[in-house]
Image (cartoon, rainbow, N blue to C red):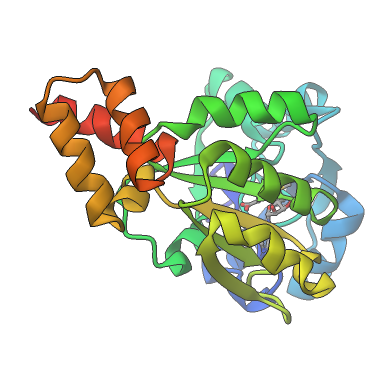
Length: 282
Ligand code: SAM
């Protein structure tokens, strides 16, 4: 990076392990005159650790428009600015997206510095092989809205990725099982890159009991990765056979899924999604 580059650098920072800061991120954070940070007090130790002389300006969800104007002023003055959040990649379930949009609208270059992101870390270690995934981040906190959001996602033929905080983890895991069915596989990725990192996989129907069995399993930060519905059906060859048979007989997708569920006990949502996919194929 040179002084002639008045760009906004969007910099990913560690989720827990300082060793995860990339060399390029360290270089940029040391050389920019300004760092826009979600929480300046939280990020000050990181800049001190790097020996960065950068001045900080706050850029959090409640001042993002004003922060964007400040950042654009700095860029207009020919100064580069780095944007960081408390942990991980800015704008991913974190403030930053609106600020980036304003800077781009103002015609300045925005340069991403990729690095830690909890969703990607969890996916990469999940062992889930389905090719498509949907990042949802945090679910609504109210039960009714949460259930509605999950219903919309249930039949998608994709892996679902959620963020959750410790005080809601039990409720959320129970809601996932109730809405997506007990058969889909859940990977619970907790405290990634930290001392008590743990990654546990089990069917959704067993997840609440597993978490309740040890209070430590409910502590820390979580990524919840739910396998795609096809996998839930794919694990049960019998469910797949019955579903195909019913569809071949010309039954509508919904009815075929309902009957296959009644016959085999496989998850209804998963069967429905699979039936849609099979009808699409034929
Ligand atoms: N921007 C961040 C990223 O790139 O992942 C996410 C910020 S969001 C406000 C915080 C949430 O991310 C946490 O509640 C948790 O769901 C997830 N998260 C952050 N750090 C984590 C970690 N070390 N292990 C598991 N999940 C984590």
